[in-house]
Image 1: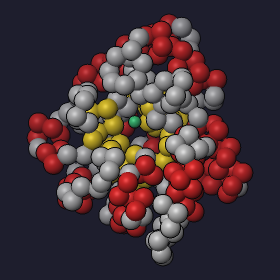
Image 2: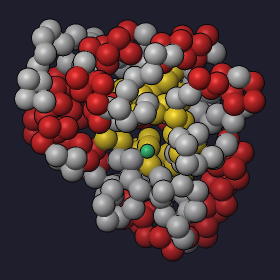
Image 3: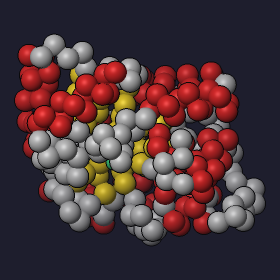
Length: 254
Ligand code: FE
């Protein structure tokens, strides 16, 4: 299994503080079946700055440690970049780290409560750079919950969607869980990832989420998500399901 989003590098952000915690997290991830893990520290989220070279340097060191301990997992570079107006200025752009440092896919985080008006301009500007943004955990964004067709527009404008495994198995409550299911049913999701931060409150639950998806939608849906993560790792084009717009306000319960 490939996990494209987690906070596992020690002392970088709100992931583990110490190397021994990193090792415990890695061991746990291996035991759940993960073979490749994209380490994606927060960058520009108002609290943490983790520019490209800082992350690349740390990943080299941590992979050396994993080799020394014969731990069967590969840590790949990435970054969870908070969207901001100046994202494409030269100095900011140089700090961006795409997944695998391959220049193709970028984890992009929206603020928790809104979809900023400049989002569309950023999506367009990224497309001019041949960078495909993957919007992380939109199922927890308040404006998207209230206006789910914002997701349809994001996908129409070239964005991809990553849902968090914890949302699928109910860690963020029933409302988020049912909205997550609606997103999958509308073929608006492309990846599932753990977004793990620790082994207590926000751990690796990708295996559980895939089990749940198989139960709800069958093996093919799980294969779709797993294959997309593999295609991403290989820096290939992912499979795009045809998205279905939300026809009416499906979340009267919200
Ligand atoms: Fe994250």
